[in-house]
Image (cartoon, rainbow, N blue to C red; front, side, top):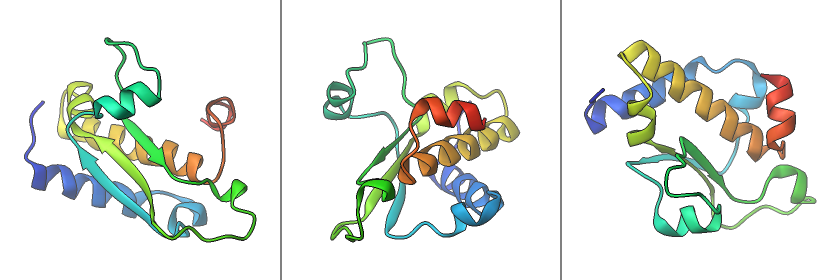
Length: 121
């Protein structure tokens, strides 16, 4: 499925506005961006195999590890347009994929690991 960068950004904005709960609304100092694919540096750091895909990535210091310190630079959540679009057959499904991926990465911001996130899902 193909969408323009502007359409993709609009889907991100819509998904963010629809996320439930105060946790999604209370994130601070986090840039939410998108890129087409993860960089080689990101893939290497995450030990991804050549055929593995990545829909989103949280980069920063989770709140649970800050111990009262604020980061100077904002944390980042990056959504990867290529894999997200490839896993969708229409705009509705793409928006849901974006929404789920943002929620997942926000959970990492709060310090949750993959096991705990799967339990919550």
